[in-house]
Image (cartoon, rainbow, N blue to C red; front, side, top):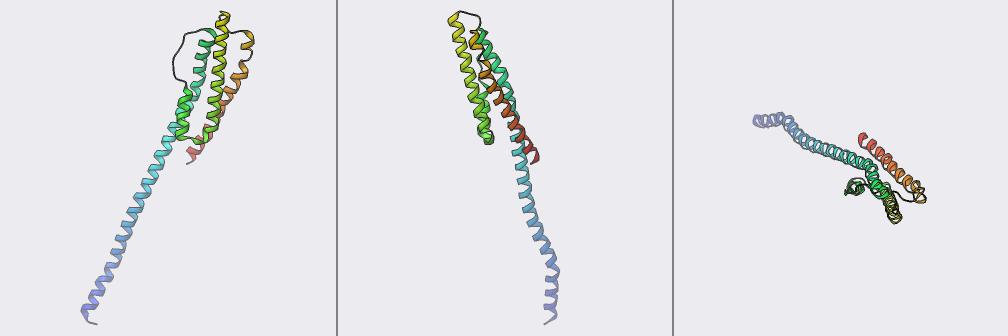
Length: 170
């Protein structure tokens, strides 16, 4: 082997650590960027879910206010307030973001419909009797319809707290 071969081998030997470092740097950059992007994406998804959960819970609390307005109109002939039930917003958010709340939201929706039907029946009885309020026997049934509605509200809130805990842990 000539001196030229030894010099070439020596030069290549000196380049090996540089090439190795370059390869490690490129791979690290690609992996690091991909990993950072994935972490950022997961953080954004978690923030969005937290925001949507907050909206859902806010709408659940609005059910009480909405139902009191409905009671005033149907049971006592108060001013009619035409506004959308918060139940539809709750169902939309649940469908898009929280499949795990399906049973609780379905129960809430069903009990809200039952209670509203009871209110409408009361209005019809009040109007037929030309009275300022529904008959006592109808009003005596309020807990039959209101208590399940209130329990459904509480069940959605309880399950939402569990979901919130899971989101905060992730």
